[in-house]
Each structure stands twice: as structure tokens, then as C-alpha cells.
Image (cartoon, rainbow, N blue to C red; front, side, top):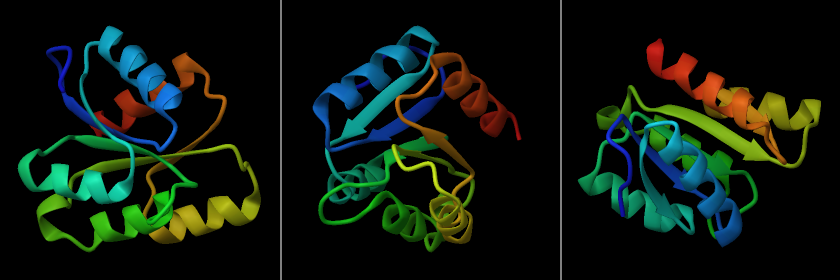
Length: 126
């Protein structure tokens, strides 16, 4: 389900409240949003949709946010997709793993709305 009229963004989070909060924040910032409860569903969405960015939670069942990012980076057709990792674990080890996986930015939960939107806009503008 899509909202807004701006660039398309994919939200992937197994927590329905987090997913809905992100959808609302992004929608009111002018983005169109598609969402998935896990990375496997997101992979299926990416077969039909081409978002400019993906925001994914780190800790998800099945495929973690880092594994999902690695999968995206292995797909030539998704080369320009920007990736933001959302996590409650703000540790140097997590940041290092995120960089190595190809994450463009990492936002710590609970996120600051202005920081999230500024980070997303900056990544899309690159």
C-alpha cells in the first residue's frame, strides 16, 4: 500500500507499530511508502517495485537487516537503492558490521523524526 506522491521508500520492520509510525512520518514528509513485516516479503516487493531507499530494522526473524542489506548490495538492478539501518543497538561493533554490509546510514531507535528525514533526504540527493 502506497501513500504520498514523492519518492518511493520501503520500510521493513517486524514490529507493526514501528512500521506504522515510519509510514506516517514518511507519508507526511511527502514520500510514498511500501512496507513489509520481514525481509522475505521485502525481497518479493523489490521484484515489482523500485524504491529509492529502504529503511530496515536490524533485528528481524529470518533475515536480519544486515543480511537484507547484503542481499540488496548483491543485486545489480538495485545498485542505486539507499539503505538505512534502524537499530536499538548503538554500538561500535554494530556500526562496523553495518558499514561492511553496505549500509548508507544507521539510525538509533527510538529515532528522532528530524534526523531520520534529514538523513533520508541527504542520501536520496546523493
